[in-house]
Image (cartoon, rainbow, N blue to C red; front, side):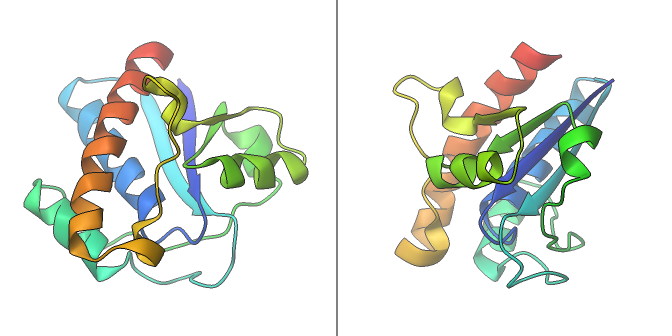
Length: 146
């Protein structure tokens, strides 16, 4: 059984979306993969995903309201087969913490893009764009890792 951990900055926007999209895809395809999400920072620990993230997920038929932010820790480096950073900074932060089994989610798309953080840059429209980008990457990732 594979174990995947999606990691962004605060675990309230991108990584909860990636986690939920992955769980939905895994469930629909009856795969034996465990997924979770975490953030490199501790600012939002215990908080639910950002309201725009919840809204966009709901519009795609996925409820993320029960997820709670947590910070990545050293145990994650051995508990998970692969940690997936949502952007280059997340990957660098994980490597600086000593994680060796890390990859950038955008590597599963042509051009290897970072998944932009809509929390800082855009309103709701940014979440819709990010959701679709994450979905494409997550499906390719799971298809490769299953």
